Length: 261
Ligand code: IPD
Image (cartoon, rainbow, N blue to C red; front, side):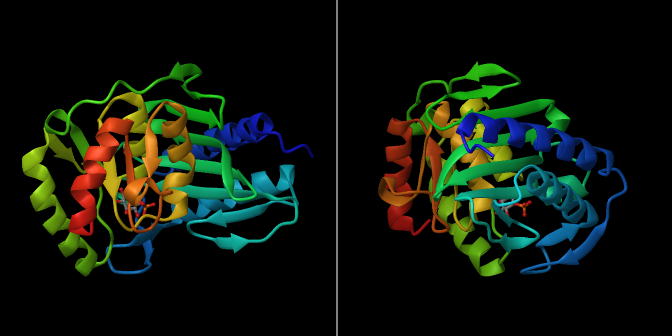
């Protein structure tokens, strides 16, 4: 098996398409199966079924790869390629019949994300990207609109599942909301990050995310000209993920850093 980013991307898109179809068919009538880190951190049977499908398709095509999935944990491999998978990002939206959830599949080579697919089935949107090769939505090249000043920025954010984290996020919001055009809490980091790439919002920030939340949509955004990183321009991290055109990124970073985001 070759590991060129284009073929990894093609596989990610194929599997994300099939997984998105499965999840979309299962959305009506879905119920909570279990809770994870806190009572608000839910998993449905469709999160599990969708991740099982993704794992089996990826391993059938590339048995020596490693996989990190939100629901199924870490599986090691020997090829140097690791897949980072969120079967349903936006599980709470999914549970409530809302359309903004997505299937995220990224491929890393030696720790660098080189290929990505994000399928948002209920919007009819398939995003794909290859490192250095640009990103596309439904096959069309995607370029994020230019930065706007902070006071004209529509800023998306999200909240974690722990009440203490949320209290801190609410404190931060108290400082951010008066300074920007408006705030959106869409309910899916994948939809938020691809949304910055697509110009549906100008920026995104959130504390407490995991690699499967940002790996695939982060590459889509980066390849559309968005800066995706953490505090002080470092790599995206659990501490903080910021996504915006560079000038706006710097303004948000300067605002969020002293607040402990
Ligand atoms: C969640 C969503 C949400 C974000 C949470 C994530 P999940 O992912 O991306 O927008 O605010 O921090 O955990 O649990 O639905 O896959």
